[in-house]
Image 1 (tube, one colour):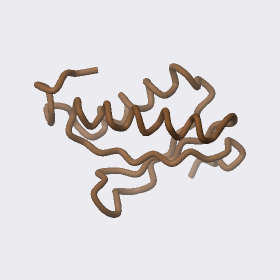
Image 2 (image 1 turned 60 degrees about the vertical axis):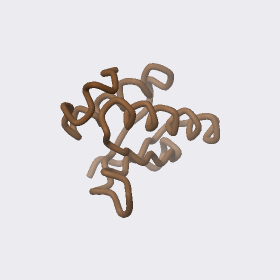
Image 3 (image 1 turned 90 degrees about the vertical axis):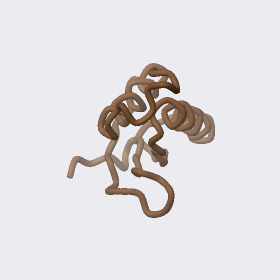
Image 4 (image 1 turned 90 degrees about the horizontal axis):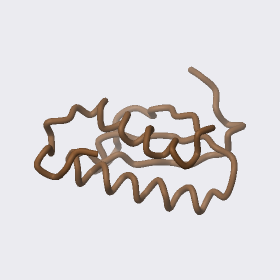
Length: 89
């Protein structure tokens, strides 16, 4: 991941890809859907569809979100949901 010196030299799309790649290292079966632009302080809401321990996955997603925000300046708000809820739009 880029260091703090690289803040905002990364596009939002690149920040999302960074998040997805990092999350998929631990949960390779994950599927992702962007849920429009953020509603409050976040730059983007990202739905993550994966089976397993939801609390553990949410904690990991928050850690990645903080790492990506520190590296890029973008705040990606993750929402972990059951894999069965995934459908391509």
